[in-house]
Length: 464
Image (tube, rainbow, N blue to C red; front, top):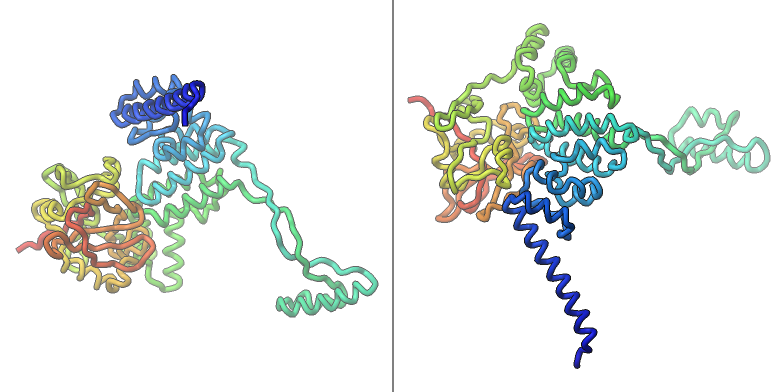
């Protein structure tokens, strides 16, 4: 079939336009990936892009490139660039009464990041929350229609009254409501389905209030102090009761209750209080004549890079209670390639690198080290309850859910899964590791490709 000349021209134009967009978008992605901010800004200014793409830009550079788009399309911008938008533009979004939905998303994202152990997220969240609480429309309660059942007075006369009195007795019986049953003769009422309007607090305020409180109890122990400060500084604006604010007064009441009930202080809660307030917590326990005290840590300094690690003796084994963060070229990495993830979670290593990564005077935790730890923590099927960082941490082991990366450096399940190499081989290409999850109680021994990148816990060598 022969295409008419005019149709051919139109088809050619369409192909040219789509090819032009495709070429421009590829050029834009290349500019972003190569950190060529000047070119990227120019292309955005000239409307030469067809989608928002942030790649691995840092937050400040992303805002420099996309600020006008972030402002005009906040929801779409957050969807495409959640990290950059939240860290670089989150406070501005929450200061804009027209960006309630975007502000909600930013708060949810930063709370999730902070609860998983990201200190930078909490620093940004502080600014975001302050901005949100100053934006008056965000404080407005919402009205909702709710289906419910209520008692309603029966008709005063007629057949309907008599039928209603029978209903009153029957319904009161079914509900075990003696008070209503006794009044059925003199003031009969019946139970009916209806719809009422209820006023609920600002959903954003409720999200912040719940998120900060949950964060204190569920985040890694090292984040507890920061969450406490955020709660204290915003308690009045969020209508958080004084008795619900985790601080030293809370610790004192908590200890007094256990003293009065003659119950042991829960180890996980104690450690969570001790991490930010150790000397004061011990003073409270002394005044109440309680024998329990905060965990005592040693420190181990890695002479290679000067970093120091907390060490806790657990039944004669001196464990690093932080993930190792010593760089080994090619054989170690930060989750997603971001240095800030190493600062929080330590580095991820191949098994061969893990075997030599621990500093002199310590060694990679062995399969035998782990078996002893699991037995002390109640057995492998229960041990994660005591060892994980957001659970009952009686041993102050503080397992960090750093996720892992495969052989292609693709990272996954940070905040959900913890994976630790042991020295044990499982054939030529696989090694033995331990895994646990933030929502489960089991510590598993698993076989993993030696080229995968997992966390490392070191153990101090026994002195001979």
